[in-house]
Image 1: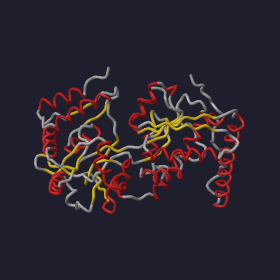
Image 2 (image 1 turned 120 degrees about the vertical axis):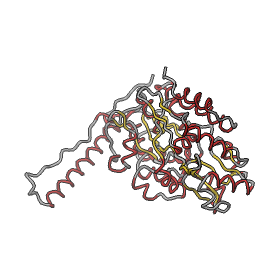
Image 3 (image 1 turned 135 degrees about the vertical axis):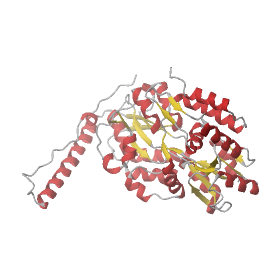
Image 4 (image 1 turned 90 degrees about the vertical axis):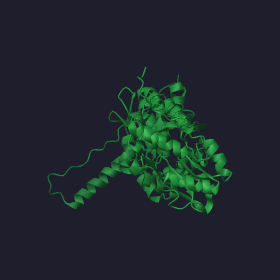
Length: 427
C-alpha cells in the first residue's frame, strides 16, 4: 500500500485577510495599497508553503504520471515534467510517464487505486465514478494560480462533485466535428450527410463516422429529437424506440448504405487516411495532426452535417467535454503531486499542449492564443453539443444498435431491444 503523505502544502491554507477600510469613504489610493498588500501576503504565503514542502522532503520524490499514449502527448508531457523538476533543483525527482488511453483511464485506475498513478489525465465523464471510488484527492487549495480566475467557468464547474473540486482543468475540446479536404469537397458538399456521401461516391473516395460507437451514434438520435439521460443510480432513460427514433435509425441506415460511407475505429481511420482514401470524417482534436498532414493545404474542419429525418433537415448533435488532471488520493507524495498537477495545467503548459496536440486549452489566456480550423469547428458545433452524462449500461447496447444499422437491420424490434438494454437496472 502506498503511504498517503499529507504534506504541509496540502493542509496549509492560502486565505489572506484583507484590510478593510472604515466605511465607504476609503479612497482609491487606500484601496490600491490594500490590494497590493494582500497580493504580497498571498505571494509570501505561497512561497512559505512551497518552502515548507521542500524542507520536509527527504530522499527521492517518486511520481507516476499516466497520460495519453499518443506520441505527441508523451513527448510534450515529458518536457513539461522535466521543466517542472528544473524549478526545484534541490529536490531529487523521479517522474515516470505511463501511456494509458484517456478513454480507459477510469478503468485502469479503479483496477487498483492504491497502485495506480499518482497523477493522471481523465475526461469529465469519468469524474463521478472516480470520486465515488475514493480515487481522487480534493483540490482544497491552490498555490501557483487560482483556476477560478484563470480558466473558463464551465471547465471549473465540470470538475466539481457535490460542491467540491476534484480536478484541475486541462483542456476544453473533448468533442467531435467533421474534418474534410477542401480541395475535393465544397462547403455545400459537407453541409449534409446526403450531399457528402453523394460527392464521395462521385470521387470514388470515403467519408464517414464510427457508427458502431455510442459516443458518435448519440449524435444522430439526439439530433433527430430523441433523448438519453442518466438517473441518480446511473441507470438510463432512453426513448430511441419511439417514432422519431425509428425514423432516425432509418435515415442513418440510408446514409450508411452508401458505398462511400465507412465506420472506422481510430486505428483503421488513420491507416486509410494516410492512404488518401478518406476525404471527410467525424473525429476530434486528438487527430488534428493526422488530418492536417493528410490534407495539406486542403485541411479544413466544420460542424457536423445535417441529415434528413422524415424529409426534414436535422442537425447532427454531439457530446462535448473537458479533460482534467487528477491527483490520486493515495499518491505517495501528495504535496508534490498537487504541485505537478498545477504546473501541467497552468497557462504556459496548456499552450504547449495545444501546440503539440491541437487540443484546446481551458485556460483563458492560453485559449486566446489558440486558433485552428479544428477549434473553430468545435466552437461552431458547441451550439448542438452537451456534456456526456450516461450510465454504463448504455455502451454495449448502443454498439450493437450501431452494428445493426450498418448491417441494414433496422426495425421496431431492434430498437426495442436496444432501449431495453440501455435502460436496464444497474445491479
